[in-house]
Length: 101
Image (tube, rainbow, N blue to C red; front, side):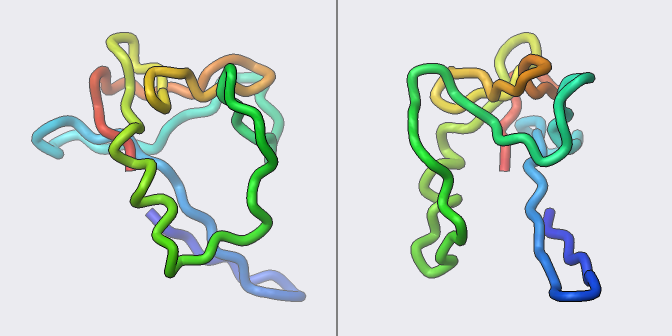
């Protein structure tokens, strides 16, 4: 899902990652844990790096990683099996074994 927010100085577009059941009958946004800070970056254990300031849509970077995004048996959001972590814990969904897009 994409959202556009108009501010006094500029328009910003945000993308929300959602978990979806295999048959797409259940779809919901990933949820940050209670206590996670607004705007906090998500980290992945063992993967270091600085986020890009701007993603070039022509490079289709999101499309390259989405095949590796899914929730585990407990609904924890993962990238290649590594949990999406914040200072408050992992991001989750109530949909286990879901794809994330």
